[in-house]
Amino acid sequence: MEQCDVIVVGAGPAGAIASALLNRRGWKVLVLEGQRFPRFSIGESLLAHCLDFVDEAGMMPAVERAGFQFKNGAAFVRGPEYGDFDFSDKFTQGRNSTFQVQRAVFDKVLADEAEKQGVEIRYETRVTAVDINGARPRVHAVDVGGKEYDVEGQFILDASGFGRVLPKLLELETPSTFPVRNAVFTHVADGAAPDSFDRNKIQVIVHPQYRDVWFWLIPFPNGRCSLGCVAAKEFFASYPAALDERLRKLASEEPFLTRVLAKATWDTPVRELSGYAANVKSMHGKGFALLGNAAEFLDPVFSSGVTIAMRSASMAAQVLDKQLRGANVDWTSEFEIPLRKGVDTFRAYVKAWYDGRFQDIMFAKTQPPAIRGMICAILAGYAWDERNPFVAEPERRLDMVAKLCAA
Image 1: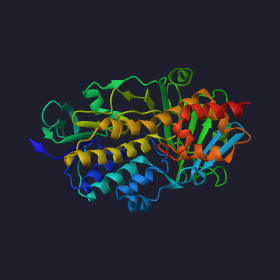
Image 2: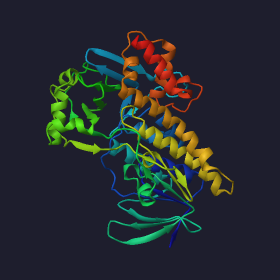
Image 3: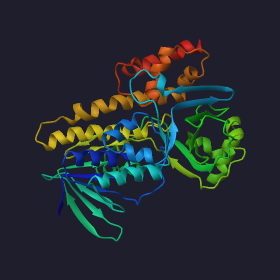
Image 4: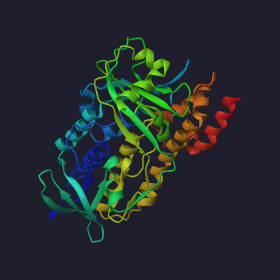
C-alpha cells in the first residue's frame, strides 16, 4: 500500500496549484492524472485574478517566459454595437493584465513547475475507485500499462475538471440550474489584418438574431485564434451535423466574424462540449474536497472556470495545511461558503447575460464610470471582493442598472 500525505486527482490548473502550494508547506503530494500532457482543453482566456495564484505557487517566471498572448480586458460585440472593459479601470485593487493561452501549453507549464518544486505526477493513471470510510481515504488507480494499485493518504483533493472523478464515484452530482447548452469550437489561423480587432482582449460576439447565442474569439500569438459558439442544445439541430460545417455556417451568419475571418485557414478539427454545466451536493466530505470544475462549472461566457479552479486550490491548500498540522477546521465555513460567494457572483452574471440584462448594460450609450469599474472588477476575476456592491448584491445591482439602461 503506497502512502502519501495528500492525493490530488488531476494535474490541470487546480491540481498543479494545489499540489505546489502543499508541497511548499512540506507535505508529500502525489498527483494522479488520467491523460498525457500536453493535451487540448478550452478555458483559454484567463482572468487577471488567475495570476495571483500562479504567483503564489511560484510559477510566474515560467508563465511569463512561455510567450502567451497579453490580455488587458474584454470586448463585446452585437451587430454594430461595441463595448469593452480595460482591467486597469476596475474597482478592486489587483492585476491589470493577464494572458490568453493555449491550454495544452499553459497546463503543461504549470504541471512541469509543480514537478520541479518536488511534486510527483503520474500521467495516464486513472482513479477507478475511492474509499473514504476508513481512518484514511484510499484510491484505487490503474496506470497506462494496466497495473492496478492502491494509494492511501490523509486527504484527497479532486481537481479532475470535467472528468469529475469523485462526484461520479461518490454519487455527489446534482443537476445544474442552468439549461443544457453546447459549445462547438476550434483553433484557426485567423489571417486577420493587424487593425481588424483588439488582439489584447477576448471578443465576445452576440449572434445577430439570437441574443442567447454567442461566439468567443480568443487571440493567440502568431496569428492564431480560438473560435467557439455557445447555444442551447436544441438550437444546433437546424445546423449541419458535421461539426466543421456547423461552426463555419454559424460564423458566416455574424458580420464581425465574417470580416475578421475572411482570410482564415481552418486547419484544426472542430470539437464539441455538451451539457457542460454541473453542480454537486457538497464541495467536501470526510477526507476529501472538490476543486474547480470537479465541483461546479457555470458557463464559459465570462471565462470564470480557471479562476474559480485556482481560487479553490489556494483556499483548499490553506485549510488542508491547518488540518494536517492538527488544527480543527470547518470546511464548510472556511472553504465552501466563501468559495461559493464568488461562484454565485459569477452565476448572477451568467444568468444576466442569457436573459439580456448584462447586454442591456454593456451596450448602453452611457455607463457611469463608477459602475463600469465595479463590473470590470468582476470581469477581471475579483468576484470575492465584498466591498464591491456588485459582489455584495450581484443580482439586485445588475437588475437595477439593467432597468436604468433599458429605460
